[in-house]
Length: 263
Image (cartoon, rainbow, N blue to C red):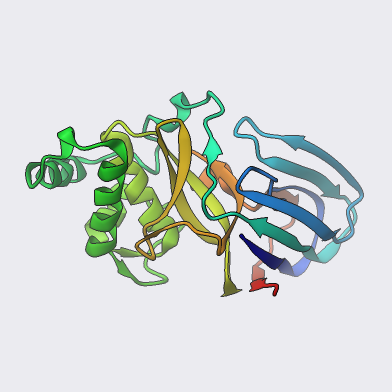
C-alpha cells in the first residue's frame, strides 16, 4: 500500500466577462476497497450556489452557478489517498451498461476485421477472461503511437484505429471497443497517476466479479500509483468540468495535476 498526496487545479480564463454560468464538476475521488481518500481542500471560485449529487455511474457531482459577470473560473481539490495495489472493486451489479458500444466506442467494419484477425492468430475463445483482456490491451499498445494533438474529445474508436495515433483517451476508447466485442464488460476511468502533468484515462474490465484496472497507454495493469476519480461508459460520462454560460468568448484552460508519494 502507498500513501499518495494529490492536487488537481484548473483555471478557465475568458476573453470577456461571462454570466449565468452553470457547471457540473466530477473531481472528487471516491473511497473504495482499493483507495481511501481524504480531501483536505476543495475550492470552487465565486459560486453563487452549490449542490451535490451522484450520477447513475456512482460519480459524485458538484453542481453550481455563478450568475454575476466574471472573466475567470477555477477549482482546486487536494488531499491524500491510501492505495492498495492488490485489492480491486467488486461488481456492483450494474454491468449491462458496460457491455455495449457507445458512440465513441462502437466498432467500424475495419475494427471488426482487425478484431477477427487478432482472434484468428490465437486460441482466444478458449482462454480465461483475464488472459483475453491481457492479450487485447497489449495489442492496443503495440498498434498505437502516442501523439498529442491529432485527436479531440469527439474522436471515436474507429477514427483512432484509422489514425493509429492519439493520447490516453484514445487508447482507452479503442481498448473498450475490443473488450466489449469480446463480451467483456469494460468501463472508462478518469484519474491521476504518480507524477505531474494532467489527468489520465485508463480502462477497467470486469473479470470474475471484480473490476481490474488496465492502462493501455503504458502497457500495464493499474497499480498503487493510480488514483481513480470517476467511471463511465466512455469519456463523456467522466467529463471533469462541463456546463454553459452567457457570452461569446474565447476561453483558455490551464490544468495542473500533481501526485506524490508520501514516505
